[in-house]
Image (tube, rainbow, N blue to C red; front, top):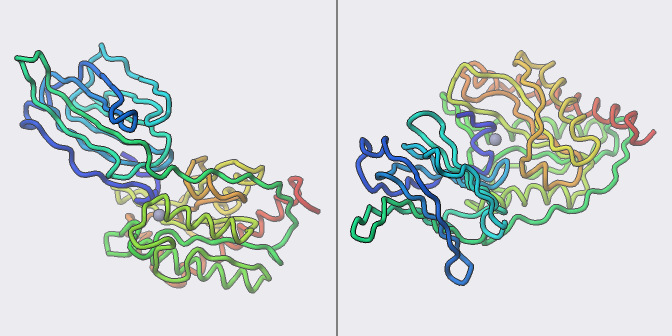
Length: 360
Ligand SMILES: [Zn+2]
């Protein structure tokens, strides 16, 4: 499975293994044959019951990106007779989709209206009860999101001029403090590399006459240690929004299970006319100064790009899981090269944004 950004993606919270009602060998043959649901606790909890032909082995994973979701990976499959999509009213759940990954494994995707925490849901299994004519069951009790994601502020109209002089630039070195981000085979932590590069970018930008607002200047959580992922990301966005930044750039390093995968990629969410221009300017300039392959730009709904009001991009400079790229990312000379690439990309951005209808 592809993990798009660094473990992060900020919002990947790994749930505990769900309870198992029986042995794994029996579980591989089980099928989900029915889905039932009902509100409980005066509407505060939604109970969803999955009927199965045998005990099921499940893994639950809560994800915030690109949209809040609870994934239930099952060793077992979904019967062809079950409807594969159930749409809810969005109070607690938006939608449940049931998919077979292959002939032995299924995945239930529960789309949520807002991010929930590990405490907001319970997952347990019940054995069959032939006397009561009840099959094996997986029960999910899920509560309304206790802290819905803050609303997205109104997007101002931006007009840009060329050059870096007097521009306000928000820089977000990914992760920090209690969150190391992705970790390389040789122990390099993403949070260390992103901070070193961001500091170099800051120095270069200030030399060019820009004002820089940083989400962090040292190894710390921006919100609070072990804060919820949404709170942590919101704190970073607030630095940019409150600082009235012209652009917001979040710096990350990617990771993947296959160590041979490498390259740089940039992400954007087109909420202003300029977001994709920013991503492509950064991407081209970063690839230009490094030997890393060009993985292109991609639209994505990462929190820092959907909740910031100014043109924003999240860049994944390389893969920390790739030993060759990890080694280079650790070199201070290479970090400086990448920083120069990011600054070049910003300068190109303002030139393009100005001629694309911004300022003169
Ligand atoms: Zn990251």
